[in-house]
Image 1 (tube, helix red, strand yellow):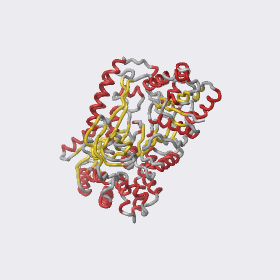
Image 2: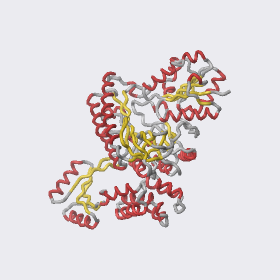
Image 3: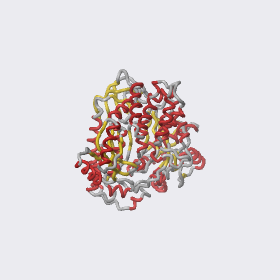
Image 4: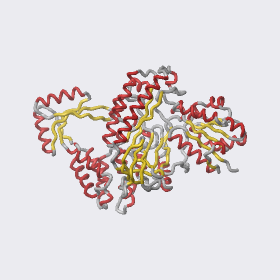
Length: 607
């Protein structure tokens, strides 16, 4: 008997992928999809419980099905996902026409659960306090251009407002070889872009044996032949570290977009939320990201009206939003979530105050988003076409364009205006769609080393093993075709800078510009050649306090030296370095260092 299934999903991309997996399992059993509830034999709601508003939508949808269930008692109605686990008993009491509920960890059991209901005709519950014990590779994907790929499940952060650790459990990472095999199959099916999913993708792989960092996973995905774009969501600021920013900068298929939820700009509220960072630390991390990835789009989440939030706390949030200049933001009023620690606290911010703050922050972000969008006007952006006349840029902006292009095609669009929060432009007749072409050429070139050798260089680079990078690139570059060298030359140059060898770095970048001037790496190499990385100075001291650094600077200035203070963020700690002079060559800097030593100062030459 042909059975029709209707699936409705609420919530994040993780929920969407969960629904796709259940749908894929049912299709394998002979079900067919329908987009009409009244025509379905099985109606499934895949639910979210992060916000009360999402649950309200489910309750409303379930309420509209009472009459349909009365008319067709053979109809099966199921509620899956986070709300099912959080509201387990309440669902059957409030909506007795529901046939089954199942939690996120039991999504692979749904087809058997439906079969059991057909046989026994009684309500069933599949809710267990366990983590997902396996990750199956389900071939069905509802997207035509972008495929969602789950890389991990659960979260270990236990923020005081969040229900996710209780509905999805602790972090469990999927083995990297399974992820890569799935992405290879997706590329073979014609997908150009993948979205890697997890509650906190930055903490991926910590408990794998051996451990695999998220940056290393990105490098593996980046090397899959045929992949054009890589996105990921969601990242926690605590785990968003330099290794991630390095991967975003240096892996050409990783898009320049990071969703980094801040939630509040108030340090007292962030502490109550158990976020693990201050507003200042978040902003410094944001500045570091933007120094690594110029032009990166950053989006975020805010919660207003958290228990105890004062007007001063809210003003701090407005100030952070103004300073951070997010490209867009999801803004919510606080609502208590079952099991979360904050649900036991007094929800003491009146509803009307929450609404006022929500609207004020929305208006501020609306202005900032518009200003950031308008900066794109006049630029040429790479667009991955999703449907006729519409696609998305690498920074995840929706782009409408005039001109013919097919879904999955990469084109260049000249942005001419902003409509809403979308760019509007014209397809360029001769698109320069070579962004990310370097690695594809590498993998297909006869003179290039094996994919495994390239991956070993990338992995060493992401781990900070720059000596290994230099030794490997030196061997691999010998005898290679000039058109196939750009990535290795770039990694060689950056690693040389890290090891304070600007001469080698300069030679690598200049060779890159000479042999592969149109490479996507070339523009970054030009920027680095113009930077202070190739200017020598003498470092006289490093302090954890700005006041101490400034005191030394004044002393040096009093003796006639040109001194300055620079701030560095290293492993979450702020350091203030005092430097003297700016010299075009090391010899001049060494002479200055000697003069300083004769005056009683310690000094070392640094690029």
